[in-house]
Image 1 (spheres, rainbow, N blue to C red):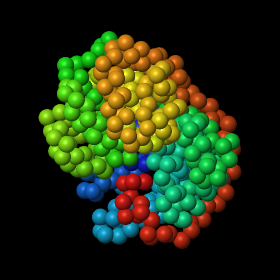
Image 2 (image 1 turned 135 degrees about the horizontal axis):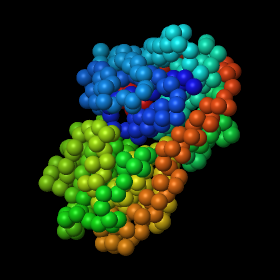
Image 3 (image 1 turned 180 degrees about the horizontal axis):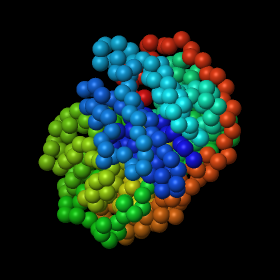
Length: 413
């Protein structure tokens, strides 16, 4: 089967979306499929600062995948003081897919994100008479369509028109359905997954370093709770408990994080690694003792799965996309989002209780291997490809709302 996978900002930022795409494509190739990746990237200075930006480094492309990189010129209009032109980027993605299809036909198109990628893929699928799949992930489902009437109409049109809609968890699907009036039967839940060979325990479950190390790995973004985590660490340190925090990743709130570290007097207790390639991310997990993800919402958290596979006890938040994989007191601990005091209490509890750390970490590793490893999940995706229809209705562009907040700060989309 010839598959065209259209991703958004795949390179080279640390993000669950990037890791998901990379692993899915790798397993599709292993299963004998011919895979082409089309992806946007930010080539401007602002985009590089937030996401790493730039075209695909050769060592990040899964072996056997043919790659076409598209600079997001429309989105980069913000660098000239203009609103982001998502319509131009949708047109560029659509034209690229159709050009590649004319050169060597595809059998199926798969978009990662409903907008703008899903819209581009559905337009290409309609023009070429191809089946198409749209995966709804992370901020796409949580934020897009709540920003302005233009995007609300387009996102709902994609949900209505896609031959198949994939989403990472039951709770995330329920949120999207409630927000956009979508029939729950439209979604097929295909959970996140991780590479349980790459991410594996490097030492006995529950073991602590001296001093203990808390790990945050992912996008450095206030919506991921990184600022709440700093407040929690300050509370733990105020008790005289020795602890260090390792922050791995880049994102829109790196500067805010650095400032908060200084304000809280944590300069000697916090280490910021910056961007870490996926190929070496397992080494970062090996440095941590407890993984903390104080996120406000997820589609399905790949970093939590990586931490669980790596044998780390997990503290996260009781929010959409997390509660589907973390069961309180069984394979992790959950606290309310935005509650630094509760986060500090959970961290103290794990630091003080070796039996609890060991039990949570062992059960989490077992769950990931059984339910959320890549061979299992990739097989579910290809089964969906086999059952697709090819009818895609036309989706017209409504008038663009130039006041949409994402046109001024597109990295939030």
